[in-house]
Length: 454
Image 1 (cartoon, rainbow, N blue to C red):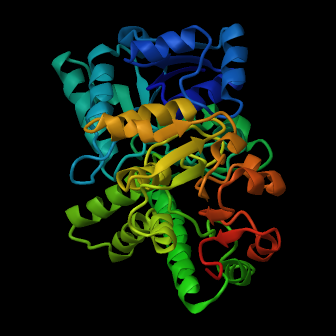
Image 2: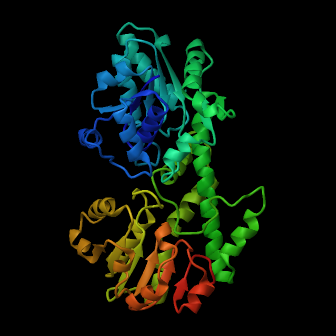
Image 3: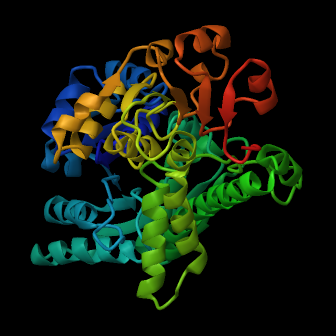
């Protein structure tokens, strides 16, 4: 099938590459010429395991192309995926300007029937706005509204495992209308996703608004579990309980399970913060005060500062004589995504209190440098207090403490003897609870985790 992907960012690239892998003829559009130049020169503008190799394989086979040509993109695909960004607006709602701009371009240029698929994460009611934008353009050209049908097909991709998630999905959600155009769209989507349903049906068909709400509900539920455990972890610190024991105790209940029950420094990335905020805003627009989600956001913002609170308790308010090592900068392992990463807030607080920071991340170093330049653009001299180094052990040389922010596998089993020898003081603040407190004590470390008898 001929498929167009509008937006060659995280969701668009993974969707386009995976559909090409299944034999489809995929046209990926982006208005950022620098991004398209990178893709056409054999690079990939984001880090995602397995994505670069998949794109190379399908480009060589002629199944995927990248361009800034809007007219060519509209002409190419019978199915047009809108996978552009929906950043948070100033009030926390999703900014739909890029989604609606893509819709208008389709309406201005389409000459045959198209199925338009909202792949971007969008609030309930967006499909109606997309449809209206396209139909208005069609009417100006004296074309019938029945030429298009808008489908909601939200993505459920975990950064760091997105290719695997797309190729082996837990579920595929498709929301369509029940008119003739909607039924035609449903059949085309069924055909497109048929390879995923050979062994058993993974697709859930529903109305458009239910599909739109499903995406937000899923992310909000996962974010809620994270904030719940973080709040309990902070209580565990106060009462002398071990949150890891608590996690095992409640996770063994089949009604609860173990997923997303790890205490830490809060969630980040491009999805959870934005989607919880947008869903809360949607509730307000309909007169519903979503108190649980408001609490989820509040707990998460506070949790990003938990390591700073622990550091101040140990070293005092003035950190100007201290050097701290940071392991992990990306918001989670196996990605270079620094959006809403707890490391940014932690490092900012350390720097503003006078500390020197030496940091390492296996993948996100280049993106981290770009983000720090943005974070300190009003006071660039503070950047001199941040040093990015090539190895974890380079980061800890003469450090007063090691702060673990991201749970990369490379950090799970370091040479603890070498680590202790390199550090000025053998102190670890573990924001991801990678190590056992009793073991660390035996090894001679002062160890402070999240909710682990601190």
